[in-house]
Image (cartoon, rainbow, N blue to C red; front, side, top):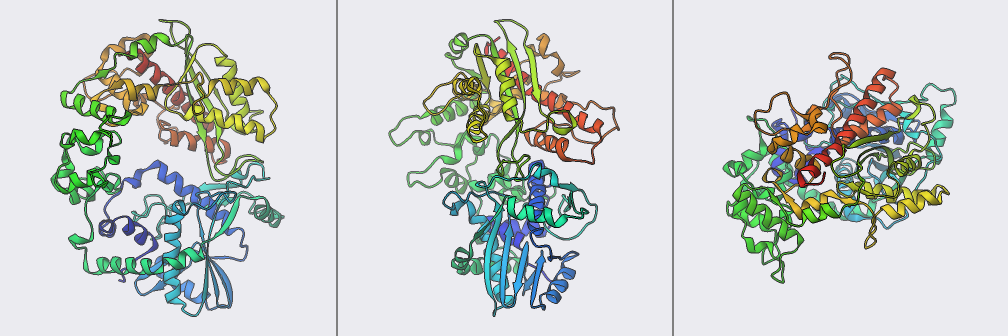
Length: 625
């Protein structure tokens, strides 16, 4: 059986040649169960489907690899033809082209990407490099297979400069899971040889409409996709592409040599580092160094540390076999002036308190807490960004704010009072419109102009600034709302009412369990697990386990379904990606019953409510009550 170097193989090996060996040996990857990667893949399929609809006469190539190769060879004998996912082979090199347009001796390679670009701005070559790499390998294979043809290369991507005139464009397409297995690879998951996520069927809502041509014409004229010619960039890369391909083919046929790769800082994100004990590529590469605790990779922004020669400091340590957090020379934390910057102070705190296994709370935190003005409003937002706009006038990946949660403490020692707002679309009356402005108005009514609103990190501030800018774009005249948004938000040196608890963590709090992280998903388990006195606080009791036997507890594990066991076998919403998917399904998944949509709504509400209660649990431990 022929060993092929596919486009996904080439992409993966370009990041690390050793990964090619693990892939071909069927090692499991972290992406096999990565919900975010699955969502990216599904978004790519939808954009891909939209792109193919611009070519009504196109022919889809389907089946196993050998069948696809045979079909492609037969169809390309035609003078003019458009093919979707044709399989092109040159020796052991194999590529599947998203869309191939052949007119005589002219071939147009069209690579469809769900990632956006903006035609109003100068092309970001760095941002597009990975995509151009993909096309360049396809070009190389087609040039060898059809030496007499002239080849043009384009990216076809959502354009952030375009505003669609189509209402509910995202609802024109839906995903239907398939059980049908084949050996096709998922481009967004290049490490997978046998994809855990089968390629779904994308359903076009109006596929049976008598006037389907009108819908297709509307997609072409009022949709969001735009071409970007990358032929020149692709041609300039051919020497490098062919050299890399030759090296990868040697590895494929003869095996990998030690000099072909080296362990480095980049290994931290290796997708072959999984819980699998028999086949863990990361641990095979690293040997005993993989088990070092605490690890240099745990250091807060440690990957940015440099040597005296401005090289990556971690790579120097790894080459010397030093991967313990305490192997880091403390002088490396200081800047060129011999001073500890903000980042260096945090790094030194982490190393010292990890060594002593001590929690650290700054002396200043108490005075900061005393200066907060009541009522305190702990707020959290859920938002959606996707390639396909939900509403007429929206751009690709334009933000939709669909939910907020707030816990308010009116005065010191008062019980937190919860309030919330959610937009769930057409299943509920009068909720099909663009929600952002009512989202902001409802929050304004709840928070008002008194007290201190607290957020975790900058997301809430970014959302409110975005909505303020959208008011001008969408022609919303509401001076009271505009002034409130301006007053509450932070913009550069301009201070607003919002207070960032993530920044407070960075400057005033550390627990060894957090390692180098300051996200709420790391701080909450550290506080909750190591301070059982919090479990006795009345308004925290819903998140207390039945038995506390030590170890790490996470209140997010207490989130449950509102349905009885067996009524619906779906994972409970407990993260931002799952929340985005739930909102999209409520709005556009016609396969769901009203009961199931209500269940997703219930899960969104309990998840967002816990996000703000988590802030209160942490604040309570800091003395903010």
